[in-house]
Image 1 (cartoon, rainbow, N blue to C red):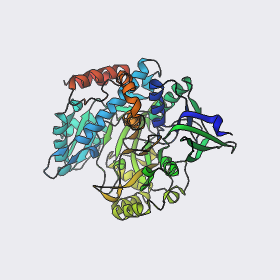
Image 2: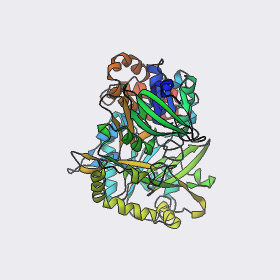
Image 3: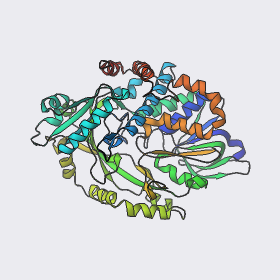
Image 4: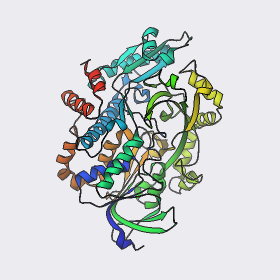
Length: 503
């Protein structure tokens, strides 16, 4: 095909939640812009955004212990927890905006209220959890959190976890009634259905093989149809690479200076899914524990109530593993081909520094099914192997780069945007909290890549996201207002009532 005939304003690579979010924002802010999407699989939300490939937690730091750290003086640093919580509130506001305007419907199909809990054992961890609870309880974003180390109270909160527990070790938990379970797969597909109605051209079975700059300043993509093997060329003035683990190789193909000295380390995983409905009904919460020494934050063990395919499910995991693939449907050559002359030293330095992670992954890969059941029994003492099946989770690629604080080959455990100096191309790398903070992250893309438009767009952004540019911690009245409003719109009024009964 002739590339001149295929010029457009914006190209989004990957039909996941990030591209869906960016496309939805742009269609509200610049409805006249022409947008094309290219996805190598047969439908949207099939890789990292798929409901079976992630934890489905509306990450707001209510239960995730890795977002709060104990400092040398014994106090607990909650700054990251506050940051993640505020970012999730931004997502809720944007989703509410879309529902209010009937751009997406039936929010109960992608978000439901569910208690979020943290669970620890042993004197040291119980003391930490109490300090964490005390620090968070003083913050308006975390009001309503409860703490208990009383076994009788815990039996009421988590009967399945407490049943048959004989250990004399101290045990404690925090509970927040106003957590959420989010089906990011359904949300992604809803957003793409909305985009198609807005005349966005969504192309499935299209694999982007190359990206290069043309003499007129546009980015030209070489796209192969996976069903016919036909090659197409498309160009745009702005390209967003939102291909999950596949984003790094495409970013490298752009050749922009910002793509240098960045590597990726793939981590795969497994979940155990309960196949016994009687057991599923005995648990109603997302319960997060503490990661083992050397484990990446995404491998924090948790027992989750989920709502998938219209029914309640119970998942435990994740069990980490290793695969050189960057995508679940990727190639075994992904890791090797991502090593370039500019990042080989960075990658080697990470390998030396992360020996504990390597040891942990080797141990996890070697686990038998019975050994996984033994780990499950740390959460559910009465667990039986016949009640649980194994499901392969999504593939994650942790970013490796050189940093001032961490030095060469520092492994990053967050979500990161890499963009060209002129804002013509941007890529989303990394993992958790990922999808939960998609709206915040895509607003960051807009700020970096369209700075000249932001003043013009700001009134519309504030209409969509009332707290845009405002700290909710410093404006608790605004927090209460937007929280109650989004809870009602998204069908989380039960959650809202519980939250504000403590106010």
